[in-house]
Image (cartoon, rainbow, N blue to C red):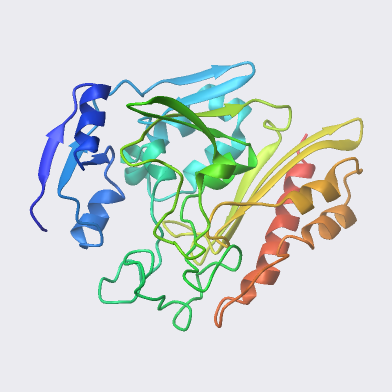
Length: 325
């Protein structure tokens, strides 16, 4: 590994000051340390923020607030989260390995970078790693790449499972820097690659995620996360579907649907949601609504199968959640 400076922040101001001088934040380290080991990222300084007080899980009747340093395993094990947000719990438990979930923070998970093999190979052309270098995936091995939100510059998928669930639930990211606190809807947090794939989110330089908030709605309890992958464990999604439904009086009052493994960002499906609201649950409704799930897809040479796969995945998850008591 290359030389770098390392420090520990005793409080928020110390962390922000270190970042203002160019240091990168590290908590669980399950993403940044990996990338540093592979020399994909070469920060001159790293600041450990684990002493900061962002470790609470607060479940209120109308709101869930999770500190950014809470570990994934802690959230998944929390009784209040398990009761009110099964979608979040399932997304977390289907992520990585038990060892990694014990180490990885929720803030770090939201900021994890793509698993594109070309991004992680420093000898390959990658606009996300080196702007202007080109994208080897466009004409190369791209079976696991995105079909939604891509550009001529990048087709890398977003890696996080729980970000898909949080996108479906209209979560908000709370961030702070020397100018104060900022609330960023998760729907506006991630950036599609366009011509600047190296810009992955709307955080300002040195800005620190302190918490994630989710509003509790009646659909949150009737929810779930389905992950389709090449093997049962320790594998990234070929596609996934997060579905939450409020079914009252035999009609769907609210629907929230997002997918992963197919988009350059966690991908919300408003057309599917519109097709569901006001309708009576049925196998035909699930099939009809899911038929629009891949609208706008632009498959590459090896991932065209994802067009049909995402439709079937969404239909299956709608049927599963619709049948819950």
